Amino acid sequence: MIRLARVEKAYGHGAARTFVLRRVDLEVREGEFVSIMGPSGAGKSTLLHILGMLDGDFTGEYHFLDQEVRALKPRERADLNRRYVGFVFQSYHLIDDLTVYENLEVPLQYRNVARKERQALVADTLDRFGIVAKKDLYPAQLSGGQQQLVGVARAVIGKPRLILADEPTGNLHSDQGREIMDLFRRLNEAGTTIVQVTHSEQNAARGHRIVQLRDGWVERPAAPMSAGQAAAEGPAVAGAETH
Ligand SMILES: Nc1ncnc2c1ncn2[C@@H]1O[C@H](COP(=O)(O)OP(=O)(O)OP(=O)(O)O)[C@@H](O)[C@H]1O
Ligand SMILES: [Mg+2]
Figure 1: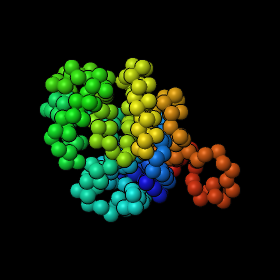
Figure 2: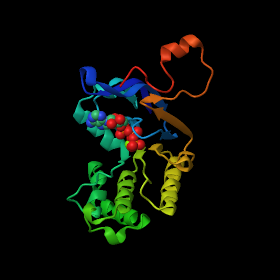
Figure 3: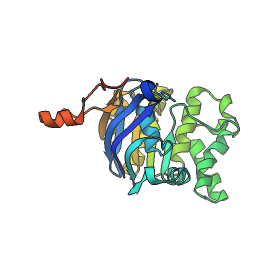
Figure 4: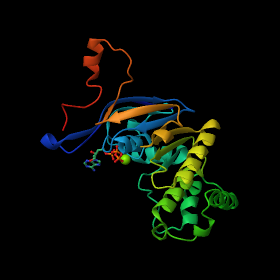
């Protein structure tokens, strides 16, 4: 479903140029549940935004469902995102001037779900996430954890083929966090592909495999590598030539 080859991203120009992602190769097959871990600043959110087709400013190749993402126009990328991706943002990104109810309706409107069905889906989702009482409030009237719950609800409501979740339980009570992980697990068992970023070993272990990012590099699994291969691939951990 996802194939990245030598993806790099940098900020700034000339001497001030700083790489945030270095030669990232990553494949995610449809139906997989992958956890991305790594220290703060490692590039996890940056990578997730690229995967979600929210950021087209990178080099290298990104194939999503056999489309070369970098060859697409911004509009076409946005369409792919809307059609296939449910994204949980680290900082929620709810729409400020829409109520909780209306925020949940947005992905359904993108998918041309009829009004009646939208109402039923939103009501069901509000109920499932225990936020019925909040439906007419605006994001600024919610606690951080409640905003995060709405963010997760918005990502899953349209039954996307791919869920990309950036620290989806970082602000939740442990029971609520576990419920979200249980939900992801069920969605994954029903066929949804999931890539989550997490600092929690426990949450990471709910996925099939863990990808470690450090200073923009994907850490190689500890498989034996020949010296020549290792030199060609660059440092496995820190990117000494950057910064
Ligand atoms: N607009 C920007 N200009 C310059 N540098 C940026 C910009 N946005 C992000 N960065 C840098 O990119 C690096 C990776 O950021 P990113 O948000 O991907 O980290 P992260 O792994 O998600 O960290 P965290 O666990 O804290 O969320 C950081 O060093 C950050 O300073
Ligand atoms: Mg982040």
